[in-house]
Amino acid sequence: MHHLGLLAWICLACAAFAGAILITYLVRRPPFDVRTKLSLFFGLAVFPALSGLSGTVAGIETTGEREFCGSCHVMQLHYRDSSDPKSQSLAARHARNPYFGDRNCYVCHADYGMFGFPVTKLNGMRHVYEYYIGGYRAMTLEQAIPKIHLYKPYDNNNCRQCHSGTLANWNRLPDHVSLKPELGKNQVSCVSAGC
Image (cartoon, rainbow, N blue to C red; front, top):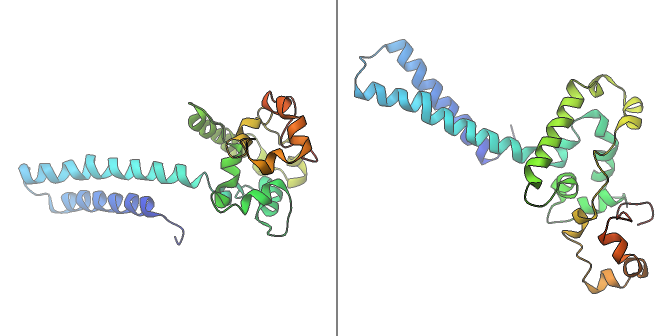
C-alpha cells in the first residue's frame, strides 16, 4: 500500500463511498424518495464510474514502471541488470536517467507515433496473456529465456526520441556519423552489440 498514488487512493475512496451508500440503503431500507434516489445515483453510478476511471488510469500508469516489468520471473535478469547501479548495459544506463529512470523499460520499448500508446498497451496485454495462459509462468527462467523475443525488430525511432542525432556529442562519434543513413532506415540497430 505504500506505493499507491493519488489516483489509486481516489479509486479506493470512491469504491468505499459507493459501498457505504449501498450497504446503508440495504440495511435501512429508507423510503424511495428524491433523497434516496439521489443517494443511489451516486452509489450506483457516479462513485463506481469515478472508481473505475481512476483505477484504470492508475493501473495503466503502474504498468509503465520498471518494477512492474520485473514482477514476472521471466524478466528478472533484465530487471536486476537494469536496476544495478554498477551495470554498464544500455538498460542500466538508461535506468539512471533522471527523467525516466523508473520507467526505462516502458520509455525505451514503447511504440511512438499516433497509435503508439494503445499499441504498446495491447502488446503489454499480450505479455500478460503469454505469462498466465501461454505457459511462461510455469517455466523456469532457463526454459523461458530462449523463447522470449521482441514482437518486431527494435525500431531506432524509439532511441531517436531522445537521441536525435543533431547534438555535438552524438556527432562526435565516427560510427554515428558514418552510419547515420542506415540508422535512419533501421538497416543498423541502435541496440546491436557494441553500440
